[in-house]
Image 1 (tube, one colour):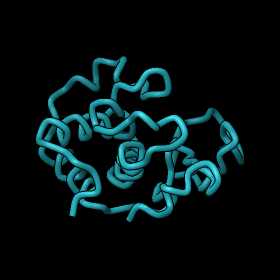
Image 2: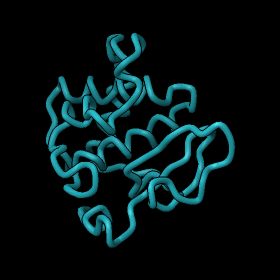
Image 3: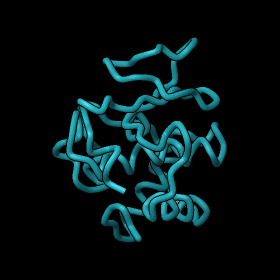
Amino acid sequence: MAVIKTNSNDIALLARLMRAEAEGEGELGMLKAGNVMVNRVRVRCSDFEDINDVERMVYQSPGGFEAVQKGYFYQRARERDKRRARRLVNGERFGIAEHALWFYRPDGDCPPEWFGQPNTGRYKLHCFYQPTQEECDEIFNTF
C-alpha cells in the first residue's frame, strides 16, 4: 500500500532526485535519501507543513535539495531508479532514515544535532536527522 499519492511522473521525479542526491552512496544510500524525501511528503510538520506532493517536495525553496540546481538531476530516470522509488512509496524504510526529515554531507564528523534535530546516524558521507517527538509526532505515527 502506498504511503504517499504518486503518479508515473512523480515516480520518475523522485527517482531522479534520489540518484542526483546520493548515487555515490550506492543503492542503500539512495534508498535512505529517498526515505527522507518520502517522509517530507507524508508529514505536515516543521519545514514541510505545505509539502503535500512529490513535485512540491523536490522543488521546495528555501529548504529543498541542491541537486535540482545541477544538470545531473535533469537526466531521464532509469528503470532501476524508478523501481527504488516505488519501493519507498510502497512503505519500505531503512534504519537511520526511517523517521528522518533531513540529511546532509558535512566536511567532517556528523554534528550531534542539526538545527536542533538529533542525529540518527551516518551512512557513508551523509548524516541523517529526525525531528524530536515534540517537533513532529506525526513522523513516528503515520505507518
